[in-house]
Length: 423
Image (cartoon, rainbow, N blue to C red; front, side):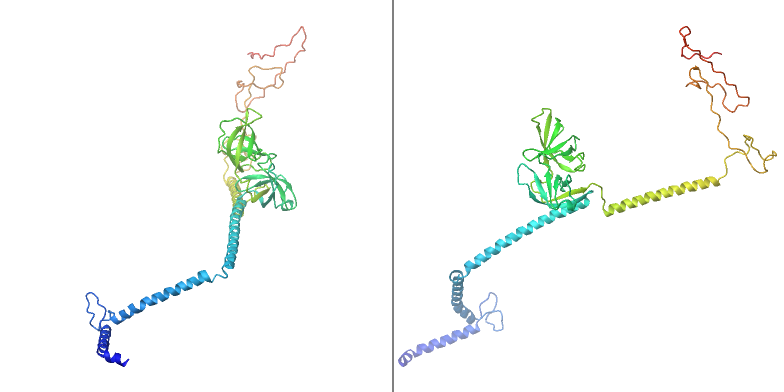
C-alpha cells in the first residue's frame, strides 16, 4: 500500500485537487438559463450543479427500486396470495342476485303504487260508489274467461254488479262468497252487455267468441261502421251504467249463420289479459264530493233567497196597490141604485157607487134555426139581432117552441136541413 501511494502520490494529489475544485465549482455555479447571469450567487432562481449531478446519479436506481417494489406487490396480491378469492366471489355473486331480486320487487311495488294511485284518483272522480278489489286468481281453463277477486258479499259485492277499470269495463260479478267473488269477463262466450257505437249510434250485444275476443253480434250490414270507432255501454242491460268505454272497432266480419248480419270485432279498452286491480260498482246512486255538495247547497240557498225576494216584492206591490187612490171616476153615473153625495140618500162626502159591471154579451140569433136541437142559441158567423149594451125596455117574451108531430108513413118528418129565416 505504501509503495502504491508513494508511486502515484503526485497523480493522487492532482486528482484530489481537481475533485475539490469541481465540487467547489458545482456548489457555486448554478444551472444556465437563457437571458440570465447564473454566476450571480444572489439569484435564487437557478439550481446548483451539485444538486443536478446528485439527482442524475440517484434517480435511476431509485426508479428501478420503486418499479421492482410495485411489481413484487402486484405479483403477490394478484397471482400468489389468492387463498380466499373463491369464497369472496361466491359471496359477491349471492349479494348481486339478492340485490337484483330486491330491485325487481321495488320496481313492481313502484308500478303497483302508480296503478293504485291512478285507480284512487278515478274512484274519487267517479260519480257512482265503487269498491276496489285485486285479482287473485283465474279459472285455469282456456275456454272460460273468469277470474277471482278478493272482495265478497261482506264487502258489499253481490252478483250482477259491474266490474270496471279506469280504462274501460271488464265484466260482471257471477258468484259472490264471503271474501271472494267470481267475475265473468266480457270476452267470455256466455257473457253479454248492451253496447252502442258512438258515431253511428248502432246498438248491439257484446259477447266473447271462441278465440276469446269480444264481438258485437246481431247487427245488420252497415257501411258506416269503420275501424277505430268507439264503443260505449248502452245501459239497457241493467248491469253496466250508460256511457262507459268498452273499446274500439277492430274489424267487421260476416255472420256465418245469417247473410244480412255482421259481427263487429272489438278491441277492448281494458287489458283483460293482465288485470291486477279493478273497481266493483256497488251502487248507481250519484254521489258528489264535498266541493260539489257545497256548490249544490249554495245554489239551492241562492234559489231560496231569490224566491223569498220575489215574494217580498209581490207583497210590497200589493201593499202599494192598496195605498194608491182608486181608479173609479166620481163623475160617472151611478149604477144599480148607488147614491152619490147630495142626493139625500147617502152620507155626505161619501161615494157609494158600485163597481162597474162588464157589458152584457151579445145575443147571436141563428141564421138557420134548428128546431130539433133544444136550447140552440147560435151558429158561427151569425149576425147580432139586438144592439149591444144594457136594455132599457121590457125584456122580449120567449117564443113558444113548436111541437114536433110524430112521424108516420103518410106524414114523413120534415128535413133537418136548416131553412132560411122568414121576414
